[in-house]
Length: 609
Image 1: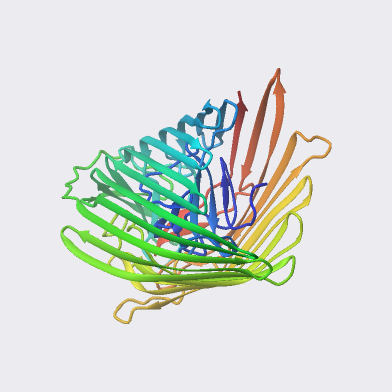
Image 2: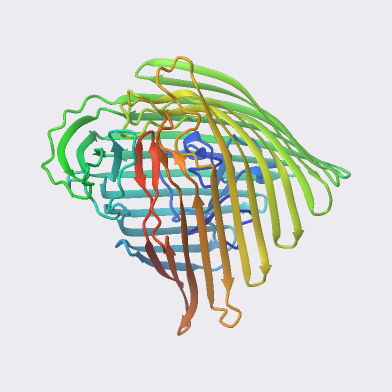
């Protein structure tokens, strides 16, 4: 929390705070859109990453995009790698929670040749228990070697492996009419035991940076893979409650054969800095590309029979008849130029454009698109403590993949043209305090489930709203980070769509607020207390807007305690989530629901050796 400069989203190690993350920025997903960066370099990710290699993540949105080269609509999630200090350090962390999760993580920073060469590495073992009563077993390993052959050259590589075993398929609640499901008993797994699968992912890459006088050359090359031996969609079809209040369900499962996805991606960027009195000019050129191959589909459906809402159903595994996989090949090549001007006392201006060529081939059927994507951003100081910012950007972004409960499950959707502009004020009245008030307007295609259960484009979607962020070090011991987004999300249906499409998109609350406070006890400085209040307002649950899912307010807190045993320093951390056990249905698709996380307590003990 101490490192968060605003309330828009920051992750450091195991701690995350903020309004946004890589799955939700202003109501859209940077991850699904392909707006992930690694140390600022273009990065297409198929498999997950953990703190074995990652040091943190920052969401670049609003004023933090000013001067950020080659931005994207709905913000960018920029990942950073672990670093190596001057001294060798081994960190161990043991953690658990009230669901029954248990994990051990051991990470090390190993300087080998002073500041010239070192390695950050580590492994993790976990038995995860999920909020829905399911679980998995997980192994992670990673290594990040850093090499500085000279003062002006840095080379960093990384490798990450994530292996998961016996992962269960969580329940997906689908009412058979225009109503919300009754509240189920959370934390109870209701699916059959055969709905388990194994998967693995690995990511490796190489980053380089060279400063040659006024020239700077940066490059990144990455390989990301995901493999699954199969997958399941655990469907709970909820019937309307009877007159006496009893609820029955019909259980169904969709099984998928082994599938996989892999990508190569990377970027080369050359920049030239010119200083001219009070003016600083930066000219940058970039070339970035990705090659993605996905193999998906081939699933089969089975009806498992009726069961009560909270009853676990146990049946033998049906004989599924899988069909062939669909091959999706995506190729994208982009070139761009950018010019930035920083004029002392007058502000900053960045202008740029990208030219991108996009080709998608699905089982031999080819489609392509070429687009010019301009962007501009500016910051104008209105005084020593107040500044005005604004930006405009067009993008060609991924639309993600169809969910596994859709008729076109796991299909990779074509890229969409998008547009965003925003502006606002940044006010820093005192050291350690920053207030941001901004407005944004985003336009994208509307992607949702239709009546035929196909996931695809139904129209156009616009998100207009106001976002507020306050980060303040009120006293040396007291810090708050709080913010909110007040959203007006609207849909206009494609005229050819036969079904009714409401004016609001699915699962877009009008109000979303986050409040975090951190306080170090002045009379016991080894103890730090923290608390949060998170609120989401109601949101529509169906494309036709006939069902409204109420929102919720979740309250939690925790403490961190540093102590010594002998000469060794330890840190104990406890966190209490959703203390009052607020319940919320979350629409993960039109008429498709999952519930939020129930009351939970997590704790860990860590030490550096």
